[in-house]
Length: 141
Image 1 (cartoon, rainbow, N blue to C red):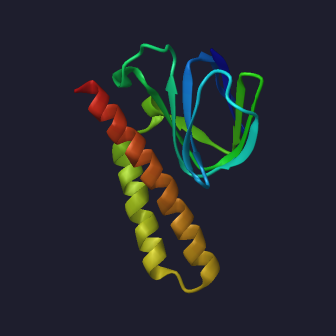
Image 2: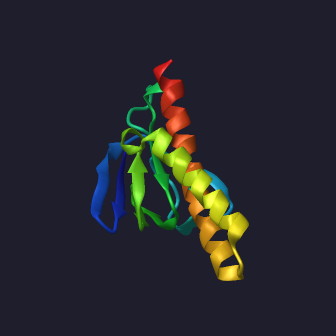
């Protein structure tokens, strides 16, 4: 087992022993299992997946939408520090869709690079949240 800690600016979001954590990095998604090699990496915006027990099916995976941060792996401990993370059951899909559409409008209306980058960042965040909401919906089927 590995100890997985997900810490946001608001405090601890998750802190338990688990079997597997899948993390978004600049080089793509990585799966972390017990005895993973030490690593420090950037977490990119994406979905963090958690499998609590080795034999848990994919339908029992837990998901978090994150905006990116820092990953540290050492001695069967995985620490992910992010500005914010949303657990799958905290995401209101209709609100996330509305926020995504608003960000698209902001992007279309952007008049400078900073405004464009801000709008794109908002779009990326909401796209990840919508993806996590979709994964939650698929689990319920």
